[in-house]
Amino acid sequence: MKIEVLGCYGGVDPKHNPVTFLINERYLLDAGTIVKELDINRQKNIESICITHCHLDHIKDLCFLADNLILSGNPNGTIKVYGIEPVLNMLKKFIMNNKIWPDFFEIKGTKGDNILKLVPIDMGKKTQFGKELNIEAVKTCHSCDSSGFIIDDGVKSVVYTGDTGPCNALWEKISKLKNLRAVFIEISFPNHMKELAKITGHLTAELFLEEIKKLKNKGKISFYIFHIKPHFLKDIKKEIKALKMDNVHILDDGDVIEIN
Ligand SMILES: [Zn+2]
Ligand SMILES: [Zn+2]
Image (cartoon, rainbow, N blue to C red; front, side, top):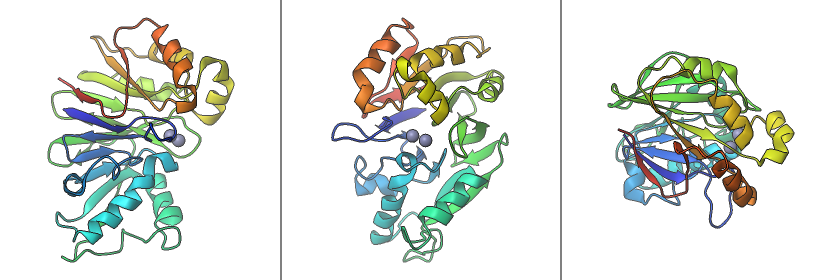
C-alpha cells in the first residue's frame, strides 16, 4: 500500500497543507489538499474518497476537485464519497447546497454521470473501497460528528484517525485487528495546551502516549503523526522526539510511505 502525503497539517500557511492522504494513486483519505498538489491528470485518477468529518481543513478541496473535473469532462465517471451518514449529510446540507458551492452530487458531467456520489457507510461495517481495498468506519472523539477509518487490502491494514481526542472506543476496536501495520494519528497541540486539546477533541504528545497504551495488538506497529498546528510545529516536534520511540514518525507534506 503506497500512501502519499498531499497535506498533513492542522492548519494552513505558505509551507503547510491541510490533511489529505493519497493511497495507490486512486483513493483519498480526506480532502483538505488535492488540487494544489495533484495536476489535472492525477486528479482524474481519483476514484473514491473517504471523509472523516466536515471541518473545512478536511473537505475544502472536494469542492475544487469537483469543479476541475466537470471542466475537464468528468472522463472517468463518478467519484464516490464515503463517510458516516451524519458527516455526508452535513457536506450536502452546508457545503454543496447550491449556496456555498454548487451541488456536485446532482450536477452531471458531459457523459451523463454525476460528478460525485454520496456513499453512506455504517460504523463498524466493512465496505468495499475501490477495487483493491476495504474500509471500515471507527469511532473517534472529536468536536463534531466524525469517524476514523480502517483501510485493509486483504493482507494488512492501517488506521487513519482523522481528528480525535482521547477515545477508548477507538483503541478497543483497533486492538482487535490482527494485521495492523500502522496508525496515522493526530497530534495537534503542545503539551501545555492539554486542556484545550481535550475540549476541542485533539491530542498532545503526552495524550498520544496515554492513548497508545490502550492498544493491545502484538507485533510492531508504526505511528505516523499528522495534524500538527504549524504555529506550534517546533515545540510539538520536540515533545514528540522526547518520547524516544523509534516507531513514531512525524509526517511532512510530500512524504511517501510504503506499508508492507
Ligand atoms: Zn482538522
Ligand atoms: Zn476537525
